[in-house]
Image 1 (cartoon, rainbow, N blue to C red):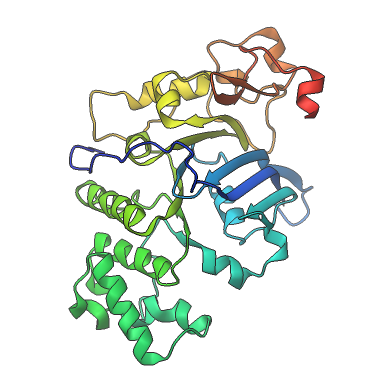
Image 2 (image 1 turned 90 degrees about the horizontal axis):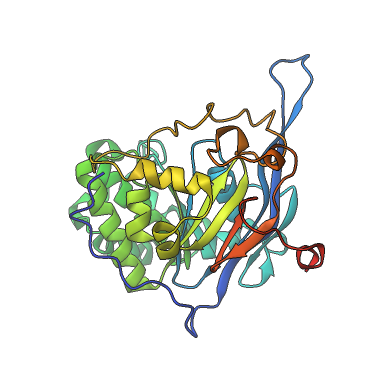
Amino acid sequence: MSTETIHKPRAAFHGTADSETVLECRDVSRTFLVGKGLFSEKKTLKAVQNVSLKVRRGEVVAVVGESGCGKTTLAKMLLGLLQPSSGNIFIEGNPITDVTIRQIARRVQPVFQDPYSSLNPRKTLESIISLPLKVHDIGDRESRQKRVEEILAMVELPKRLIHSYPSQLSGGQRQRVAIARALVMKPEILVCDEPTSALDVSVQAHILNLLQDLRDELNLTYVFISHNLAVVEHLADTVAVMYLGRLIEYGPKEDIFRNPKHPYTKALLDSFLTPDPTKDVPEIALGRGFPNPLDPPTGCAFHPRCASVMDMCSKVRPEQTEVDGIKLECHLYPQPSKAQAAE
């Protein structure tokens, strides 16, 4: 997509005094048992594997990768909609398992990919946006309506639409309603799962501008799930690259875009740097296609498609190491010693 009309991104996040960690994953994994038929043997699908990352207050962490890499599964765990099979998730230092789904909803809210299916077509905007307030028994009818009017203005929708139905709105307006519904509880964190991919290119920039403005105005924290690197470059502070359920590169956006370390990240960026600025990241044409998650490659999962593959890549899974402030899993860089790995 073209990003010429997107606001200039604000200064990168630098870990100031008010930037304490508000959301954290520690070695989080999620597996599923998948069977093709009633009598077939079920196989284990490792959707997310040992992911560790921190999200600081006011920061935008973008999770990127191809379809099927585990981005959405990770987002659902951050929202409390799925429990990790192993590992822990913390909200401001509190284990997510120690709080109820209602308590999570007061702090963390989603903005889904498709505004056409995420809104009830039989409800008016007032009913849709005020529903979280009703569920949590916040305010009376009059105060809820006032809050809905305030939030409509905040997302730049006219007050006259308050009694309209989703079918009467454009795609961009529907996504603004979805954002309004997420904000009505005054959460601190938004988990945005491809919030612009279902929209026309002409309105994507407007939604991104709105998200940037709301971030500044409300000091919001975003976990931004995307495969569109043009969006990530403009919006994110930190980039987490996932491949086949693993976090293979993680660090400041400027460093990753300027000097990516992992061959997969380099391939993503090479695909992004195309003469046509309206194109999304195309399928990566390296080696064979995306591997079967039910039968992943041995060793480094990326080795069948990697241009820099070595003999050991197919035999030994790389451990996470750190190079120039970027955390990554790749045999091209010195592996941590056993003592370092145990820390």
